[in-house]
Length: 560
View 1 (cartoon, helix red, strand yellow):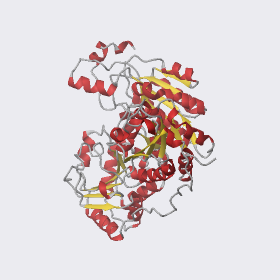
View 2 (cartoon, helix red, strand yellow):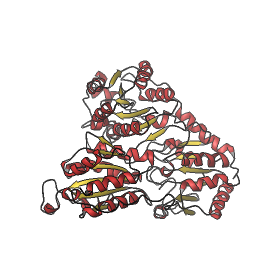
View 3 (cartoon, helix red, strand yellow):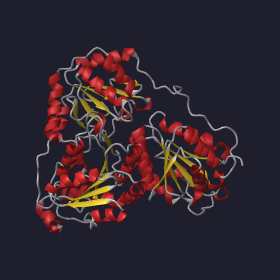
View 4 (tube, one colour):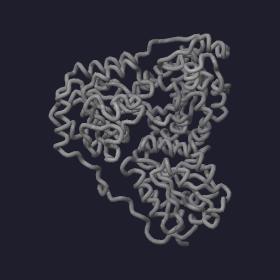
């Protein structure tokens, strides 16, 4: 029997180093599932929702730096997965979404679950390709994998009618790119010297490190080497707090959505910004205020491998289109710029003071910072922490101190539901490392059903739930805009520990701060999935803001 197009797709994925596919089974790609059964080199992860499958793929790509693959059914399956496509686009994460389409004879007839995917994903994906000839599916797959990683990485959508999967695909499979045939652009020696001279001439320079340095160890090592060589304080871009050991004397903080005014005012004193491997997005630049757009208030050197990312929002003094890691490696070998240590010390001390846990307590539940501080100590910052969306993440960014071995997985789009699926992907990819999902009560009930996937796989991971009975971020905005008028944000939650046990996981509920550490210790030591359900304070709604106690009591939260 000749090879089918489905087998060509799977064979091409395997030949290009794809070792895992995330999916919810669908009838439009049965031939692909059958081909995967004969391909032990690829692990098929059966998920419980397509949004979760796409989130898992995004998390896996973040850890490996390679294109991750999500396989979904037509119509509802594809639209469920759209949240992952959007997240991949926002975070420049390489993702291949393979969609089984209606049969080619039914295209254009408004057939059952038919969608025009070019219109649906056109604003999110780097490419949306419909493959009409099975003989060319292997070629299209190889091209999609390449495009997802090229330039600024992002999502590619490959749409294949059900009958095309079943067509013959004779001929050889597309070969994987030869080692070194796609070399990263190296920085010119003259440019490295120019940057070194700019840093040496500055009194208060800072380096902003971005996501292009995240996968693997090379970028982190180069960043550490550059900071130490030149005495250069390092800030990390949004959701990349883990790029430099947070206890390093060169670590100056993390630019996130809750970066405080005092820190912004301190950073405004800088007289040179060296941005490496970041597109300088809205959150990282604090609403395009630092560095200011389009004209920064201080000289800006912007290093990014994709020339299309340079000069778009910020006009740099010097823009270098080259590999971020290669630049930092050469910069670390340059003559020391001799930045005065007082500037880095000042920034690091401010960060250390902010990170210290003050031991706050509340009458209406555990202040969630206590749980995060205990987690930081118990793991020594060497965990993989996946964060969902919500203002509870401010406690993570403030009090979880990542070591050089630790990893933070979050998404810049702040889409709810990422935390638990991302933890599943991380536990599959890094079984030797503690994996903890930090998630709110809202996000837990969006994709927490992936606990079933974790149990089925016997994965060792912990889900730490901040339960304040509210969509906390929106409640915080609500109290600011319409004080005392609470609507649509109160939540009636289950006993999450009992839910965990029903899934077959270990579960504990904690309502007082003194019991947080032992509960976390037991969960982290458990050989399978575990859940620590913390009933948290609504008054202490984030690491930096509190709700008025009368408003909380009026809403009945004091009875929780």
